[in-house]
Image 1 (cartoon, helix red, strand yellow):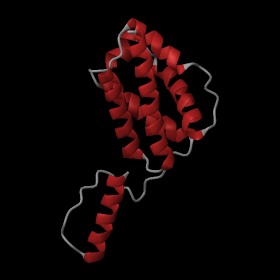
Image 2 (tube, helix red, strand yellow; image 1 turned 90 degrees about the vertical axis):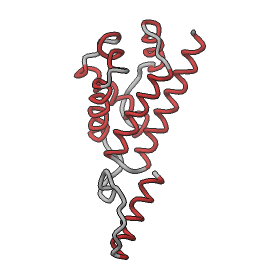
Image 3 (cartoon, helix red, strand yellow; image 1 turned 180 degrees about the horizontal axis):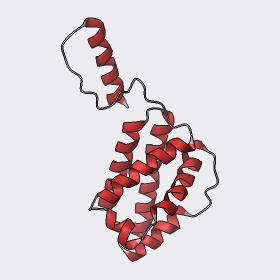
Image 4 (cartoon, helix red, strand yellow; image 1 turned 30 degrees about the vertical axis):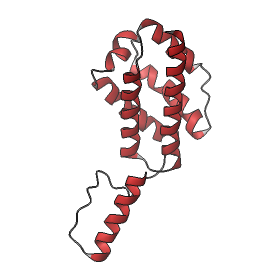
Length: 155
């Protein structure tokens, strides 16, 4: 968030002072909005899972171990994040137990959580800017941390 603010400020100064210094902007932060709807979460999760499934370091967990059907899985994931971020929706499953069961089939390592968080943060940061976007990333870190602690207790 601080980087985005700095880039926006530097960009404005460049316009005001008509200077030639360059501030690389990988996105147009002036027109970015916050996550506000289920459709926003669907957009984030579709791009996020596309990244996960394209990353050989983690994709096998989804394709070979969990054998997810993305068309069935994505609405459930969006349900979860809708409850967490927008405080609406109806996700009622025990997300921790689902991942503990997965961990029983293949060990989920700290590296997997780091990759997962990296892709999530990048996806959110490229598309949204605001309190809900930051909340999604913060809550994702919290969820990942709790899962890792619980999994370490089982090992």
